[in-house]
Length: 259
Image 1: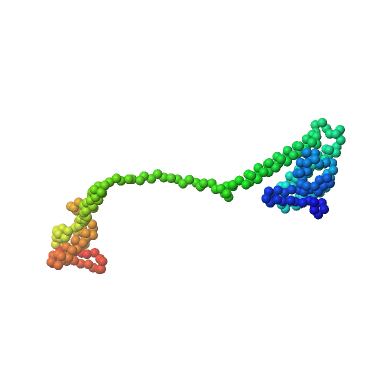
Image 2: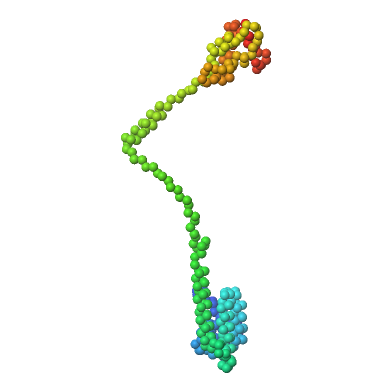
């Protein structure tokens, strides 16, 4: 024991073991050793000063708070049982009730409880040392959806490949571009139409009057085709002196009159 009644806090880094070293009248050493000796009746508990034990325990708790606070609770149980054992030993046997345990049995029961506590602490440390999900081990990600794909396998020799190539080439050569003929209003039809519909009364008639309402063709010509052919035929007939063409203003309607 050092520095008067101050307890020593012994820490072994290799075994992570911390002990409360006591310095009492009739005993000096760790508290758990005192319990073991008391169980085997190798130490006289009557000579142990409970007040010194409590003082040294409280000083130990202040030190243990900075190191391992869980030890304080364990040693509190040990110290309280020692105090209880001593009080039972000091009492006369006549004052001990029949239903109460003897000091020897209490000592054995205390040792059993301490071993049980140590076993639970070891088991808890083993559980905490197990690999943790998200830190040491990782779960497998979600399984990707798989799709079945069919792969076509072709079995052909060189002759079959050449035949297939030639057949493909022949198909491409047979394609002929066909231009669909447009349905147009011919100049001859327009000339005949103007000669038949122009009267000799000397009146002017709008070019739109000569656009046919019906056509003998399977596909009816467009309106622009009618106007283009009638205009071309009218200009040719005007050149020959068969009719006259007049337009009052730019982009105005065309008027025709037979000469």
